[in-house]
Amino acid sequence: MGHRARTLRATTRAMTTAFLGVALTVSLAAGCTSGHGPGPVDDGLGRTSGPAPRGGTGHVLAVKIDNVPAARPQTGLDSADVVYAEQVEGGLSRLMAVYATKLPKVIGPVRSARESDLELLRQFDRPTLAFSGAQTKLLPLIDKAPLRPETPGNASDAFFRGGDKAAPHNLYLHPDRLLSATPGAAALTTGFHYGTAPAGGRAETSRTVRYPVAEFSFTWSADRHRWLVGMDGTPTKTADGKRLAPATVVVQYVKVRESAYHDVLGNNTPYTETVGTGKAEVLRDGRAFDATWTRTAAADGTEFTTADGTPMNFAKGQVWVVFARSD
Image (cartoon, rainbow, N blue to C red; front, side, top):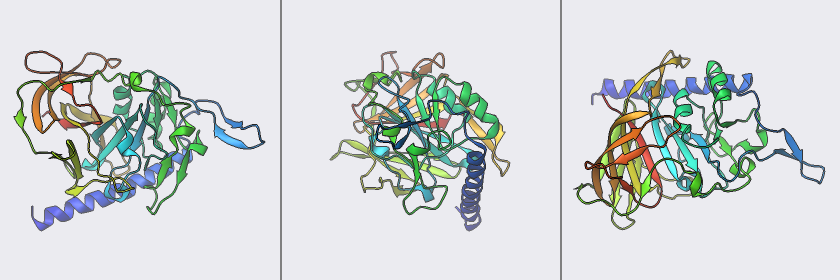
């Protein structure tokens, strides 16, 4: 890549990050949702403890996670059961972490929601979606969606600014302020199957997925029996120094089209279609398996099958699903 291309790429990333920060500030000032859930409650000692827990057993927590370089390292990402990676404006990436079996003390940095998140989350029963804000025109759709939207605007006691990162990359969440209990594995209605790996596949030690100005890499570690995550050419760790290492990585090829929304730079917000069918690559146990994904309706989970039509089993542990363009 020439000097001019590298400069353009760096400039695009920097400008997009800066302007998205301005957009976030505007959306928070306007109020992020209509304010679902009860207001602050008294803890019995005359103290206001913030919003009453809205979620509970059976309802997963989904959190939009910032993923530009200025937001790293993230906190609590290693505790998620499933991590979805998607392309957003300007060719950047963003994560959605889904929690059901374990809730860390802190999660973040938290960022804004996108239209395609609503379709992706339909597979869960009344999930709680924690996010920092959204475009004004998108807010009514979020309020109408079958989920519980939680933002600093209506759950202020659950969110806080902290750490050594600059705004807007320093918004964090206390998940126990939103959920009264850990939802449990039964809440993960993703359609995923877990078990022994199928026969076949091919030996694979690394896999890279590239967006216009972002990159995910996964390198097999025989010692840890996990895929070590890298982002933009750098090993990915959590804020406490742990290397992110899912047991299964799915590269899911999907249609990514333009939506009706744009950022403040005029960049169109990509819409990732997760209902339909297409090809996928499933990485587990140091091998890669070709698969087909199928999600008939938004309320369904995603089924992954091998060439003979049998369910593609995932390895027990965290799953990363990276959405890649099918065209």
